[in-house]
Image 1 (cartoon, rainbow over the protein chains, first blue to last red):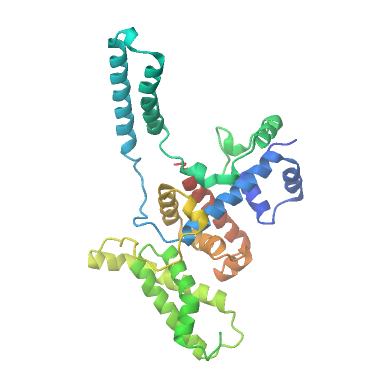
Image 2 (cartoon, each protein chain N blue to C red; image 1 turned 180 degrees about the vertical axis):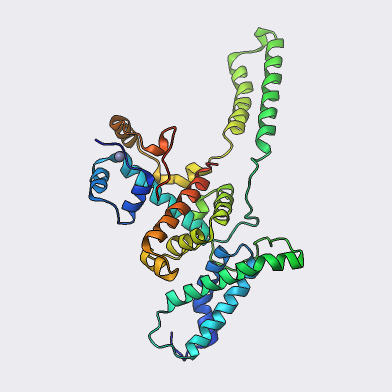
Length: 156
Length: 170
Ligand SMILES: [Zn+2]
């Protein structure tokens, strides 16, 4: 199997264009099939968003949201306090179940601080790869240029 | 739609599409409504003049795109003259959210709209006609006076940038 196809070629194929050799590759490569499905799905989602009414302020959001660092700092402070509290208490007063109850909200806070946005997963929905597809991708070991450190040169 | 159609009928039939396209191509909701009104009046006059055999949809689209281009060219100096900040786009009449739209988080929708606003004029026009209005690539090329190859290049670049926005890639 040759290397996988760049997004530009997958795009052409999805539009009904492209070379025969590329079409053959697509027909036999589950990774490229999955990438094409995801590409088409993404474009549908984007088209649907732009078909709707613009949000109240459709201005560029250059700066990252401020809440993340604050949330992370708050989570760290919560961890420190929780650790101090658990260390200072005598062991007899801390049965395992109680430690678990104390630690879980803290871990949840950390989780929300570190992974604040699940929007993309929602957006991708059914386009996420199945285990079989990912295994097929791994077996193929054909990494598309978009996923390599150097990336693809922009095609004209 | 023939020469006997009333303005009201024409307005009901065409305004949603014309306004949606204007909203996409102009960053200002009030400008979009103004231009849509201009286009509908032009359309009504053309209809009264009995342009037999005219392919209405491509014609309306072309007139709308050109009207938006003219408005964009003149927008900068009017803003300067009036000292007016770009308007916030709200209170718009338009289609409701689609099921796909509803699934996308508000932050992602913001990113997509912001990325769309940062596309070149050509990329905006090509993407809007192909993936919002549902034209074929050949129809897009014809409407915008581009070669098919050029339309495809603009389209793919737009797709790349908008996908980056969807996926949250800087
Ligand atoms: Zn492949």
